[in-house]
Length: 174
Image 1 (cartoon, rainbow, N blue to C red):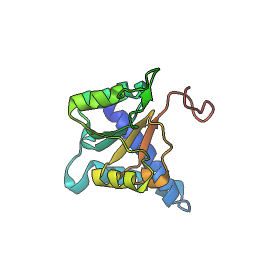
Image 2 (spheres, one colour; image 1 turned 90 degrees about the vertical axis):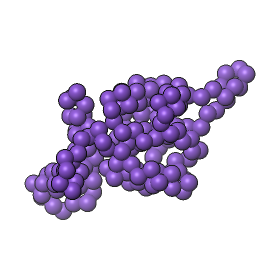
Image 3 (cartoon, one colour; image 1 turned 30 degrees about the vertical axis):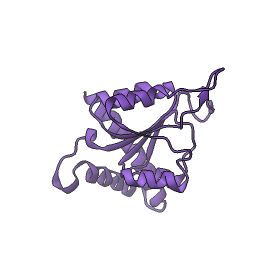
Image 4 (spheres, rainbow, N blue to C red; image 1 turned 45 degrees about the horizontal axis):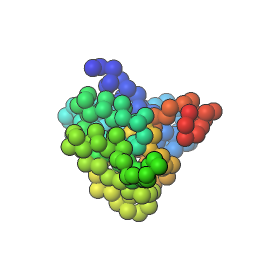
């Protein structure tokens, strides 16, 4: 319900604050705050119409099982998840069988487009993101460090959910 809207609004404010602090280093805090509020208001009420946070065009980046609950929550809550970007399927186990990630199977079951670029930061990956025209990238256990060019391909940048406290417990497995 309403808690989801507050989470998305909080994430958007965080992204907006990062953007404003980069673009407005010489402005006083009150001007930066008003810039952030104006920016979020433009997104929420663009062209005179109230926008529901659930209509934001999301691209979900995730591979491991840790990402699956977040992905399913966004889908079940009615958010507009355009696509899932996940790591390519790799051989696993003693027999080196290629087993698709559970998150990929969940996306295909929901009819969500799945992309598996080898390197999302490469020109082909950037072209893919630009073609999707996302408002926000949501990253959970994706497995690649995203470069600034990749993050800037989304209107509001990206939000990352990590399984441990950063930066103290940084690493692949918290």
